[in-house]
Every structure is written in structure tokens, then in C-alpha cells.
Amino acid sequence: MSDFEHVFDAPPEGAGADWTIPQDWASYTGVEHRTWDTLYARQMKILPGRAADVFLKGLTALDLNTGGIPDFAVMNPKLQALTGWTVVCVPGLVPDDVFFDHLANRRFPSGQFIRKPDQLDYLQEPDIFHDVFGHVPMLTDPDFAAYMEAYGKGGQRAASLGVLQNLARLYWYTVEFGLMQDADGLRIYGAGIVSSATESVFSLEDASPNRLGFDLERVMRTLYRIDDFQQVYFVIDSIEQLKCETLQDFGPIYDRLKDAGPIAIDAILPTDRVFTRGSQTYAARGGRFAA
Ligand code: PHE
Ligand code: FE
Image 1 (cartoon, helix red, strand yellow):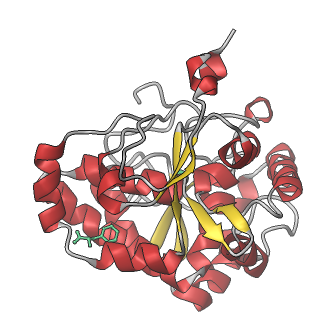
Image 2: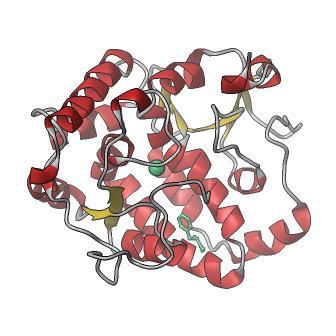
């Protein structure tokens, strides 16, 4: 992760003790605003029929398509009225404890910068398009809002127990790359997918990845990749299911996981509920690095 541009060891100059910085909306350039508009328009061609209803409803409620990068001073009152969440700006990836503290207090930390015009399709660091377009619509849902707050508190606990790796996998396979069984079929709700034109299609329609029913302990054991499309996606039945299952005390689970060992990224277990048995050909050919 050291090759990331927006990574710091301590709050950089201008940041508060909680690592927040002003959005400074007036400082965005015309090019940056147009980048938002381009990305937004592109996703809106792809997401109807693919993104979960709850995501699309949240997007509409926030009204993020008024031209250019959303001004948090305008967006936050709408979000706060719905679920008590607000979005704050941070200078890049923040330390785990800072991240968890924000979530536990219903503050979502967002990158302030937007990707460059030559990075529309792929960047590894979360920018404001990923963070706001991808994450914030789900925060308008009361159950998801509660889940994210609980995750922040759970993160503080997991850190003190030395089991962050397990909890991080849960975040990855739900908040970032989750699929949901909607009334009309499989739908996307994970922010890493809905903010990516290519993965929005790949995650649902490609024959390569496995699509498996969500199982809490199984997910917390499953390895993941940060540099390419996922090789497995986990499907929840509803946000309510996710909230209810994660309400339980993870103490006994963490104890069991200590002896359980990780599960390979492309494994299908006899106990898995299989939606798609993937061919894994995309990964086998080298993924985005294929010749
Ligand atoms: N229930 C978890 C615990 O006891 C906390 C948690 C809730 C973690 C929701 C993730 C998501 O640690
Ligand atoms: Fe994210």
C-alpha cells in the first residue's frame, strides 16, 4: 500500500486531530466537476436493473446529479435527516482506529480528491466518486446505517483482540463487493462494484467468478484481492439479514476462527449455497494484466 499517493502516518498539515479536512468545494476545477458528471452518467446507463433498489432509491434521495461534485454542505443535511449519518473529508486512507471511530459515530470518511481523466476505469485508491457515489446511497437505508455504525464499534473491538483481518473480510465482501438477492434477481449493493463500470457488469454477468450465499464465518475466513475483479461474490438475502446476523457477539466466532485458517479465494465448499459455480477463466488468464 506504500505506493499510494494519499497515505500518511499522522494527520497532515491542515487536518484535524480526527484527520478531517475541509471539502473546500470552491477549489474543484471545471475538469474535476466534469469527471464526476461523466462517471455519474456512465453508471446510470449501467446500474438500472443491476443495482439493488435500496441503492438506487438512496441515490435519488440524495440528489447527487445537480452538476459536478456534490457539495457536502448541501448533501449532508439530506443524509442526516434520513439516518443521522454525515460525510466528512479526509486526506486519503486513514489509520484503522480513526476510520472505526468515524463509523461508530455515523460519520463516513470520504476522499476529497477525484480521479484524473485518464483514470476513469481504474484506480486503487478511493476517491470522492467511489466514496460518495458508491457508499453514501446505502447509508440512507436505516438497516444499513445501523450495520455500518455497528461495524465501526466492532472494529474497535476486533483491533483490541488482534482479529482485524477477519473483520476486514466481512467489510470487503459486504460493504465493498456485496451482492443481494432482490425480488427480481441478483443485484449489486457493494460500493466497489456500483462505482465501477466494468465490475458492475462482471460481478453479475461474467461466467468467471463464483457467486455464493452469504455465510458470516465463511466470509470472515475468505481471502480477497484488492487489485482486480473479485473471484467470489457473496449474496445476502436482505440488508436486514446482514444486520441481524452481525448483531450477535463475535467473541465465540473469533475464538473458532483462530484455529480455522483462511479459505482460498476460488474455493467452493460442500456447505456453500452456490448461485454460480464460476469458470475462473478471467483470473486464470491473468485478469487485467492479461496479455
Ligand atoms: N457483533 C460484532 C461483535 O460482537 C460487531 C459487529 C457488528 C461487527 C456489525 C461487524 C458488523 O464484535
Ligand atoms: Fe470503499
